[in-house]
Structures are given as C-alpha cells and as structure tokens.
Length: 186
Image (tube, rainbow, N blue to C red; front, side):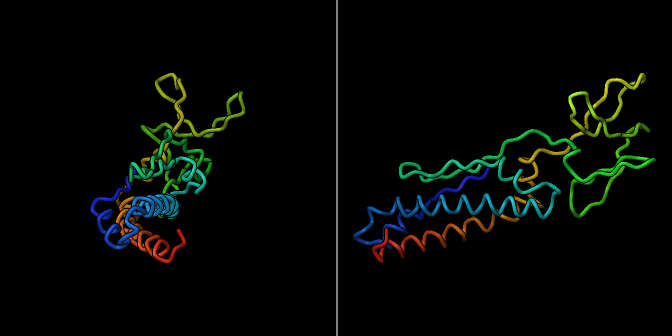
C-alpha cells in the first residue's frame, strides 16, 4: 500500500496563494490525486521491467482511493492472489519443465525431491503447471509464484525505486496548480 499525504505543505500553499488561500485544499487535493495516478503508472512500469507479467495485470490489481478536500491523503492499494506459474514464461522439455518469473533470470527447472513438474490440462480446459505429491503421486499440486502486491512491494526491484520520486513529483504538481490558481485558471 502506498500512501501519499501532505504534512506541512498546506501552510506553504496557503502562504504562496496569499489572499486566495481558501483554494489551498483544492490545489493540494488535485496535486495528490495526479501524483497517485502517476505513481500507479510508475509502479506498473517498474514492475514490468523486473517481472514477466503484463502491465495490465499490475494496473488491474491497483486501486486508488483519491484525496478529498476534507482528507488530503491518497492511497494506492494492490490486492491479488498468488499467480500460477503457467501465467509466466515456461518451457516443457523431455527432461524437465522450466519456468521464469524475473526478466533478468533464466528458465529454472521445476523439480523438488526428484519429482518433476509438468503441464496439466484439467477436464474444465484449464491448463497449469503442476507437480505430483506423496508416495502414490497424488494429489497434484498447482505451482504458484508471488502475488502482484508482493511484486509491487519489493523494496529492491519496484517500490524502493519509485518511492523516492513520489515526493518530488508531488511538489512539482503542487507548484503547477499554485501557478494555475494565481493565473486565474482554477
């Protein structure tokens, strides 16, 4: 979850606006909401550089709770279940089934305790990568990767890269809206 809020920026905006200081909440609210949209797009873009997931899936998982004049805080929430390995790049060979989740990585053999993974097609038509369990090789376990929220929250690969730029982006957008109010456009 990403939270964008203003701490001491309200008094700064009121001073800059002078006798138009009553428009400060509107200026900050618009700047926060624009920054939240920008941050969602940047998080998806950064995640797309790291993981082999389509950007649409990242965007679909993130919802923005916009700021309001009474609550100058926007929140970007990401929800979602773990993803099946079948959704990523995979390869079926004679010796092993392999899958790749991270772009900088390579296809990794999917084998645990000598039991190899395989592509299974169920009666419903659903395809997945699975692995047998137990001595009698039943039940069959579907193999999963991380969830999209976990990918987006990765400090080294995604969120940690975007988070430092959010504050400067907010400041730029506040200045843009102050200028619009002072010029009489808002």
